[in-house]
Length: 262
Length: 161
Image (cartoon, rainbow over all chains, first blue to last red; front, side, top):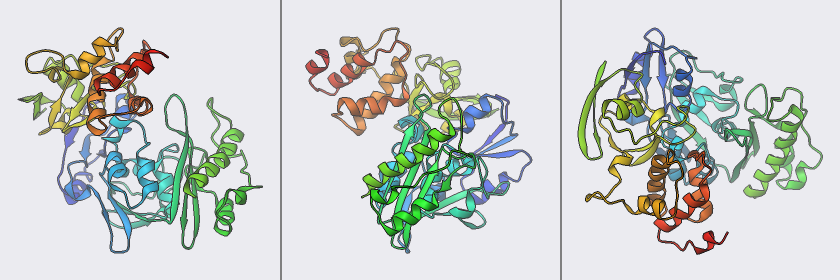
């Protein structure tokens, strides 16, 4: 790994300031970034650790009834404390393994936007708001393709607000070696409709399966998925599964998530 | 170089580290605590699991500087004060929960975390929790058995499998 300077600011303001330095890079829990650095795929001059920032830690409820998660909150903490949104807590409880969940953070996962990560599906299916040091971004505008988000250079995810659905569940089919989601689907039923977000499948990253949303908004039962299918074109194809296989898995996982949610 | 100070197995320690120094390197090279093993160095095998402020983490996927001020526990701190094996270590010995022994420090540290959260885990809960600990001798059967025994549970059904 190339060497760098490490800084651990204790406030968001200090972190944002440190990130203005040339080639500065934010460090969340490091569960993706550290392996990346080891492979010399990144060469920051300064790493700005966000995990010592108290105001970015923890889970709480907003006045509007949303579950608010600080950007540097670990998956383990969300799994334990997001009891007001059981679908979210259960999703966080199945990311990686226990040691990874004790370090990995929601902000790191969303900023990285790995096409096979779990959190993007949860945020998109929930219509979450991604709060940064400078603005609020709707999940629908935030995810812009594999490893690409609306974040500007040096912008930090400080908090994520999740409207709590009436019913929800995240189901994933894990790739047996990496345990990442080969395909993961979050189904969330709100008073004004159902949202279905899919990770792991598309070459464009996390996406909403709008046909399923329309069908499930009209009829929240497994029957509603009946004739629906997704095209394998544009789906990720690799040695673990073809595009058509992933497209099929999306429907299967949606059905399982739905069954668990009901 | 920057100075870091932390408590390791109850003792205050400090040292100078580079930004890129991993916690696993600091423990093994600077402190000579080589019980924390580096199996894969890619965050997958769990041989380097240690406790940081009471939580299991992979020491190869955390920087030493991030552990500044933390309370760190390693396999060297697991034995009883009189030097005898603790309940988990003894159960691994009694039930042959190790073959080559390379993964064992991580297995023991993960088990300690599991039993703190869940004092009487089921076989399935043990297997799920150890998702991030790989034993390349594939000795999982006896590892699970040892953990059942360490948590005071009957292992006769496992022995019969």
